[in-house]
Amino acid sequence: MKNSKEELLNLWLWVNKINKNNQEKGNTLIVAIGIGLVLIIATSLSLFNSSKDKTNVQAGEFSKKTMAVAELGVTRVHNFLAKNSKLAEYPLKGEPPEDWESQAGTMQLQGTFTNTSSTNSTCSSLTSGAGGATVSTTVGKFKTDGDTVVESPSSASDFRQGAFKVVDYRLEKTDGKLIKKILSPTPKTIKEQLDELSGGVAEGEIYAHGILEIESQINPGANSASDLFTSTNSSQSNVQVTIPLRRATVSTPFPGVWISDQQIGSPTNSIIDATLLVPDCDNMGLNIAPGNDVIISSMGFPPLPTPPADTNSKYYNLGNITDSITLPRSGDQHIETQAITQNGTTYNVKVYKYKVDNINLNGGEKIKIVPGRKVVINLYGNIDIGGSQVIDNSCTTTTNYICDPVTKIVTYPTDLFNPSVFRRENLNIFGYGVNTGGVTSQEPHICLAGGAEVFGFVFAPDYAVGAAGTGAGNGFTGAVWARMFNPPSTCGSNTGQVVVVQDITDWDAIGLVPTNIPPQIGSITQWQRIGG
Image (cartoon, rainbow, N blue to C red):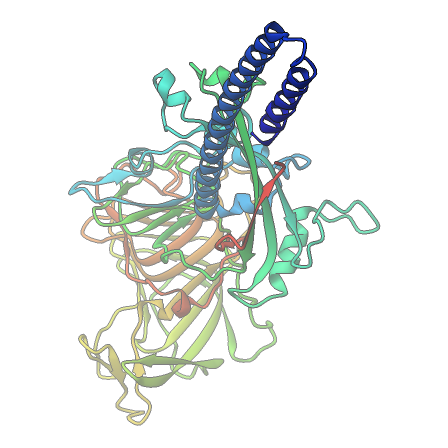
């Protein structure tokens, strides 16, 4: 408006000058024409500036709206990474397989899915019933197609609300230096560098940052997805935010069944009354009893504990076990003690360790674990037990020990001043056998049949493990972690009975820490607008 007022004043002065110059000549016609010209120009300038102001207001409104869309995009992507946090350790456009698209192609939507129904349910039915797109589909929207403000848009008005997409996501060290693949002198992937950075900080501390850039656009003429992110858009905004990656603790519930690589379909009638942890639902037909969870996670098994040296006189080699035996045996010496606190009292639990080749029991034989003693069986071969055979770690009482079924406190008549505590995890069976037959191999194995039971913690990362025809028993009571479960041709069957009952729920009680723990995605720490 300032310019138009100056122009109007100049015109008026010009007309005035003409008027003065022509007063004596009486040239009234020129004066009239001048005044008319001034009025026409003034009116035109007023209309132009009014239109200009209106356009500026509209542009400002669109700018505010696109910023709001960008903020929504940041929130959605941040929430997505929080649920699928392993993806946050890869750049958007890295060299495959270190990029979002490659990683998403191998991921199932991560999370915990609870069977809230009153009937058994499978892994796939629980995860699909929870709704939501796959990781690959979501990444495709974020990276290429754009994600609309209105989810599942169906009309032109939906598309005209705007959309956003991820234009960049990269990883930086805490000092701001870009993390990229190292080619020489010692090659290192981005993930390897992040693992080193994570290992160098305490739990909960920041070891890297994800730098996320979002572009948002609004096209008031959009009628479909193809009209988004085109040159005809009326408004665009770009924002960049910083997302801290923190070294995480294990927040996942303790799994009663953890299967790492189910390459053969498991029977579809077998029931587990336990939390199931798997990388995906492929070939996993086990029925999950009501009230239990399915956890989809990319976490990896912890490493097996290092066995004692064979030369250790307190590490006993039992070879093949084919007859009933009580462990520890009379005369065996504990190799260490473990402090266990229960109800405010600390007990020193004696730990006994044994090396075993194979266990094969028949005709009512059993392995009995003395309550309150911790027994570790390091297995290098197979386990085959059937009928009424049991590896029994239960709270029982004999003349040699008294286990209180309520408090779980165990006393020993010959050692009254050193009570202990019964726990299901007092029996550890660690499988050290190695699969040499490929991903579908069902060897080595741990097989129960015909009512056979194991009470304790079984961790056999390269084994096929299963229970067939459990009869009056429950197969495994405690927890079982293995490569695959219930392979039908070795030791599984399509029994409609319970094959696992979870009776261990505490990570600390086992003392093993998973690998490949996803990072904890922190709250956004920096926010800035990119461009105009």
